[in-house]
Length: 105
Figure 1 (cartoon, rainbow, N blue to C red):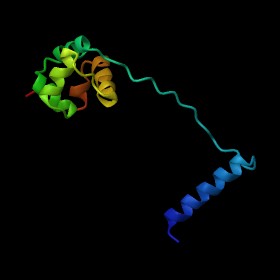
Figure 2 (cartoon, rainbow, N blue to C red; figure 1 turned 135 degrees about the horizontal axis):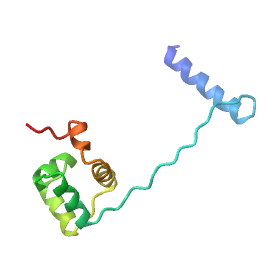
Figure 3 (spheres, rainbow, N blue to C red; figure 1 turned 180 degrees about the vertical axis):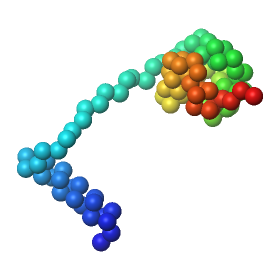
Figure 4 (cartoon, rainbow, N blue to C red; figure 1 turned 90 degrees about the horizontal axis):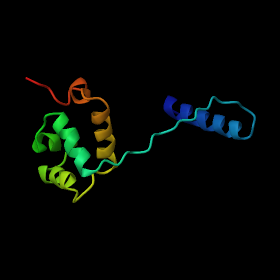
């Protein structure tokens, strides 16, 4: 038996014992903030604050320029992942630079 397998089996035994009240395990409760819903005007405002073209902004999100155009015109809404990234960018104006997503030369 590999060490990984042994570790997994021990973990499962510990969980079973915890559920049966035979073992007290440390537990954590986390709260995840709901995903914000940015509207077309706000998406464009966030992009403009970053001084980025639609093409550059699209590249950051891994989408086409047409997708960014659709977000900004209100034809489509960014998906959950894009909304979360928009939140990060909007929250910290230097986020893209700090994370080396955008590098000024």
